[in-house]
Figure (cartoon, one colour):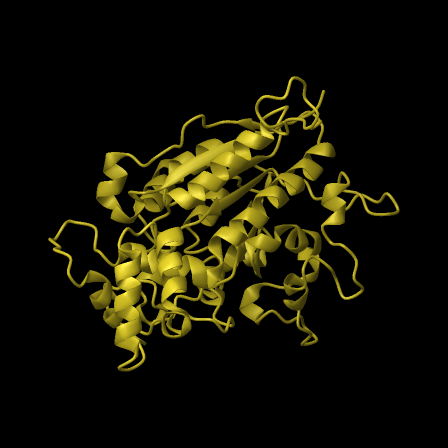
Length: 389
C-alpha cells in the first residue's frame, strides 16, 4: 500500500479522482530529510497543490498532524476539499496566512479556523487580521516573544507546541501556473496579475505601468538577474505610452523582442516574469523574515522534547536568489562564531543552533525532470536543530 501511495504522489495523481494533478517536487527527498513519523507534528508553510502535505500525512499516519499554511485562498480551498477527511479528523489544519508570519500563526493556530471558512470563526469574526499586524496582537503584545524565550510567556507558561519539522516549497503549484487568469505564466494569455494573495492590491500590471524606467530595470536585474534589464525597461516604458500593458501576452512579446528564440530554449520572458512575481509578492523579504522564525519555532519545541531528535527544516528553492538566502542562513546558524574574518578572538558570542544535513543542495534526478520539467531548477536544503547536552 505504501509503495502504491508513493507512486501516486510521485506522478501527481489525485488520490480521490485518479486524474493528473499537481506534482510535488523532490517528494522522496522531502520525506527523507523531514523524516515524518507517526504522532509527529509538522508545518507545511506553502501548501500549494497539497502534494507534500498529503505525503507527510500518509507517512506520519495514523496520528501525525500537519498545520498547512498558504497565502492563496484558492489553493487552500482546493486542498481542503480534497483532504476533507484529514481536516475533519483533526489531522490537518489549514490557515490562510503568510509564512513570513510563521511564529504568530503557530502561536495562535488554535484560535483560527480553516481558510475554507473565509478566515472567520463561527461568530463571523475576522480571524485573519492578527496575521497582518507586525507580530503583535490587538493589545500590542509581542506574539513572537514566546519563541524567543524558550517557548514560555511572561508568567513562565509553556506556549510552544512540539513541531517536529517545517517545510517550505518556494515554487508555485501547477494549478497556479496553469491558470491563465492568475497571470503567473505566459504560456497562455491572461491578465497581468501575479498576486499570490488575491486580497492584495498591488498587481504586476500596476508595477509595469507605473514604475519608472530605472525602477523596472532594477527589478529585472535584481530579481530576475536579467542581462537585458535596461533594454526591456526602455521598451516597456515606450509601449505603455501608447496604452496600458495589461496582459501577459503583451509583456512576453515585449520581453522577447529582438531575441532569437528556438523551441527547447528558455523563453526570453522567463526572467522578467520571475522578477515581477518576486517584486509583487515580496518573496525574498518573506523568506528572510521566515528563516529565523522557523529556527525559533523549532528551537522552542525542541526545548520541551525529551529523548528525541531536533526539529528539522526543509526548504526547496527555485532560483539562485532564494538559494543564496537559505544557504547563508543555514551556514551562519551552524557556526559557533560569525565574527568578521581577521579578528584574533571571537567577540560575537554566537552559538551554533543548526546541524546542516545537506552540505550540497539536493537536486531532482533526470527522471523526475523528464516527468516534471518544472522541477529542473529545484534545490533542497535541510538542517536539524541542535539539542544542547
